[in-house]
Amino acid sequence: MGMGATNVVERVAASIGKLDEAAIEFKAALDVPDGGVLLALPALLAGGLLRHAQKYFQLPKGYYRLESIFLLLSFMALARLKSVESLRYCAPGEWGKLLGLDRAPEVRTLRQKLALLSEHDSAQRWSEQLCQEWMGADPQSAATLYIDGHVRVYHGEQTPLPKHYVARQKLCLRATTDYWVNAMDGQPFMVVHPPIDPGLIKVLEQEIVPRLESEVPNQPSAQYLEEHPRAHRFTLVFDREGYSPALFQRMKERHIACITYRKRCPESWAVEEFECREVELASGERVMMRLAERGVLLGEKLWLREVRKLTDSGHQSAIVATDYVSDLGAIACAMFARWSQENFFKYMREHYGLDRLVDYHTEAIPDTTMVVNPAHRTLDAQVRRQVAVLSRLQAKFGALNLSGDIEPKRVRQFEQQKADLQEEIARLQSDVEQLKAQRKATARHIAFEQLPEEARFERLRVQSKHLIDTIKMITYRAETAMVQVVRETMSRADDAHSLLRGLYATEADLLPDQSNNTLTVRLHRQANASTDTALRCLCDELNSTETVFPGTELRLVYELVSS
Image (tube, rainbow, N blue to C red; front, side):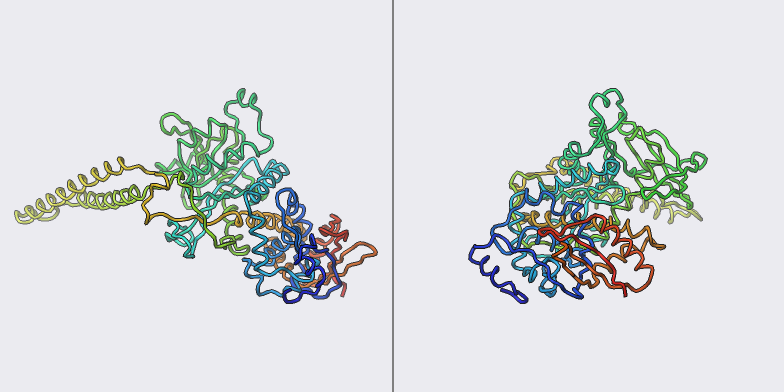
C-alpha cells in the first residue's frame, strides 16, 4: 500500500472496486512541512482550480479523488517541486496531511491519474473556459494582450525535433515553441501548443485571433465599428517576429489593432520633434518619456502610426501601430511594458519548471500538416551565405583606391587587383542569381508526408503538458493575488514574492475542530517583526473569505502562533 499508508480498510476496498473515493479527514498534526501552501488555497479556488473540474474531467473508482489530485499538483507547484518525479523524494505521509489523507499518491499512481485526465481534449476545453472567465472578470486587462512564443529546449532522444534559435542561450537547439497570451501586468490568459511551429504570424491568425474574437469581453458592436472605421475590438502587442505589413492590413480589416517594433528603421528624427510626456505604466507608476509621432506609409497602401522614444543616450526606439484612437503615450507604454511577459517566462522557468516535460511520450504528426521544405531551407542558407560573401567583396572593391606616388608598376598591380575582384564579383553575382532562381522554383512548405524519411520526426505529446500548464497558470495567478495583499504592509514591495516563497515552505500546525467545523492552520513566527505584520494582514484577508476545504465542511482559519 506504500510507505506511510494507514487507512488500510479504504485502500483495500478501493483495490477491489468497492470504494468510489476516500473520505477527506484531517487529524491534528504539528510542524507539517510545507504547510504554508495551505495559505494559497482560497486564492487557488477563487482562480478556478476546481471550477468546472467535474464537468471536464472524470476518474474511475479509486482511492484518490479528482479534487485531491488537482490540489496536490498546485501545492507541488507552490512548493517549487518542478516535476512529478520530485514527489519521489518527499515524505508521502506529510504531504498526505495537507490533503486530509493518510499519504500522497506515488509518482507512478500520479502519472496514471494524469494520463487519464489528459485523454481527448478535456484539458484544452477546461483551459478555454477558464480563459474566458478570467477575461470576463478583468475586461480592462483583456483589452490589450501580449503574444509571444516561448522556446522549450528538448534534451531527450525520443524524437529528432527541428532546431530553433534559443535567444537566452544564443544557440540553435532542438526545441518546441509554445505561444502565450498575457495581460499587461504579466497575468497569463492562455497557451497554445502547435504540433509544428509555423511562426508567430500563422499561429496568430489561425489559432489565437479566432479565439480572442469570441472570448475578449466588451468588444464594440458591428454597427459601432461600421460607424467608426478607425475603432478596434482589442489590441495585440508582439515583438519583431510578428512584423508584417500584410498582417497589419488583415488585422485592420478585422478591426484588431497591432503594436510592435519597426523593422529596418530609417534615419533618425530631429531631436526637436520630441517632447516630454507623462506616461502611466501598467503598475500605476508615472514616468516621463520623450516621444514623437509621424504617419508612415507601408507597401504604398497601409498608413500606420510611428511613435518613437528618445533615450538619454540619443537612441530612438521606433514603434508602429494600427491603433488610431489611443494617445501616443498609451501606445508607447503598451509596447515598453512587454517586459512583463518576458519576466513571466523567466519566473515560470526558474520557479515553476515551465520547460520541464510532463510525460515522455510522442505521437505521430498528421500527413497533411505543412512543414518547411528542407530543400528550400538548404537553398535559402546557400543564398544568404553567398550574398554575405558578395557584400564583403563589393565593400572591398569600393574601398580599393590608389594613393601615394603613382608608378607604372603600382598602377598595373592596382588595375590587376581591381580586375580580379570585379571578375570574382561577377561570378558570385551569377551564382547568387542561379541560387535565387532555384529557391524560387522550390516550394517553401510541403506536406509532412512529402518529407524525406531522414527528415521525419514525431511531436511531443501535449495533452498532459497543457493540463499542467493550466494548473501552473492558476497557481501563478493565485501567488500574484497574494503578492498584492502583502505588498500593502511591506516597505520593500519587491520582496513580496520572496516572502511568499518562504511562507509556502514553512511548517504549520493543522488543528481540526469537528464541533465548530473549522480547520485551523497555525503558522510559526517569522524571522522579523515586519514579516509577522505582513503575515497577520494576509491571514485576516484569507479568513474573511471563509473558505471551506474541498470535500469537507471545515472552514479554514489562518492564524499566527502567539508566542
